[in-house]
Image (cartoon, rainbow, N blue to C red; front, top):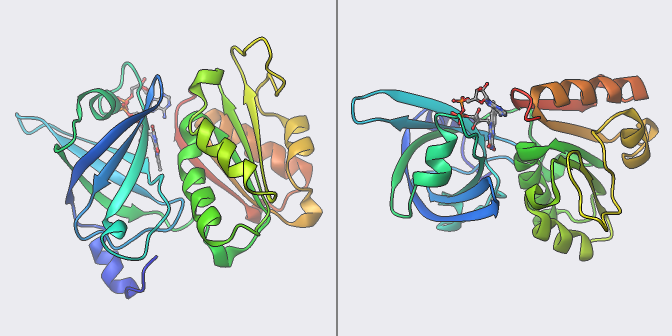
Length: 259
Ligand SMILES: Cc1cc2nc3c(=O)[nH]c(=O)nc-3n(C[C@H](O)[C@H](O)[C@H](O)COP(=O)(O)OP(=O)(O)OC[C@H]3O[C@@H](n4cnc5c(N)ncnc54)[C@H](O)[C@@H]3O)c2cc1C
């Protein structure tokens, strides 16, 4: 986050801004990343989200929240460029527009950054224990990108559940992050289908997987859980049952179960 007085930021984040789509690229068959230029963007904390508002020709408006996927950048012009990663829901109102219709040069309205609770910055320390279901990885990726740029010594583990191998969001980037970083561990689990030679986990995230993968409660990790509502609730309950301090377990629910 840049050095701007909090009162100024409070007003700035309520303002609807016109963001220009610079680039749109596929992450998986159903997920795209939108790189946007947001004039006047003051910066964000990893984990925060924006509200996106679409207006139809007849004036009908729809608003949805999307986490910022990119790490914060302090200096202009990089500071005004942010990325959102959106999963297409076939019966959805907003996500199919963002993933299928939006083109470079188009403009959408957004406001933010929003949310002060589900955030992590270097000063918060570690170890970091991140648990994601599907597109719930987006705000956690902002944390990992920020960590890679600013504090790679903070120990971090990401446990990520996806339905299929080809649906693992940011798979290649996570592979290169772990290859270069002895303090980062990434564990994938696939819940529906897996390649023949898949050696990873093959079930939903539950008690035993959390116990085997994440730092023990005695290490006092900072835990962040994000994904479909049902998954977040069952993981948060399991973490507390494992003995983690509820005050260190932060959750963000993206909506109904993706299963
Ligand atoms: C704080 C926050 C951050 C979010 N960040 C992201 C993000 O980074 N990337 C992202 O792709 N989404 C994110 N979401 C979810 C997003 O806001 C929308 O809910 C999602 O894109 C669906 O919107 P839609 O208009 O396409 O579908 P809608 O028209 O709202 O819903 C269509 C159908 O899908 C169901 N549905 C709604 N949301 C979900 C969901 N998340 N999973 C499965 N089914 C659902 C509805 O019950 C309905 O049946 C976030 C949500 C919150 C609250």
